[in-house]
Image (cartoon, rainbow, N blue to C red; front, side):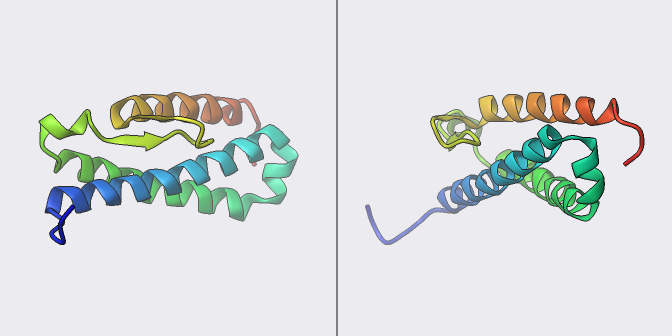
Length: 113
């Protein structure tokens, strides 16, 4: 390993850091939803902050991934939210969407909070 880090390698490290933050936010959001509507109502500012970070970070992640050569995208391994395993970024992305859909669907069952 040399002293030179390519732009692609730097971008991959940025992707991993963004995924790490999104994983943290996803866990916070899942915990809040699990605690229920009343909890989310009482902690509405925190809930809005988490959604705000996700709304800000996810497009950044997409942009960073789009700048990686196609041949390298499948080699980018990122941790799942509990850190128990590493998966290719594209698998993580599908899983992230699935979990977000479930959480927002559950929240959609509630009246306005």
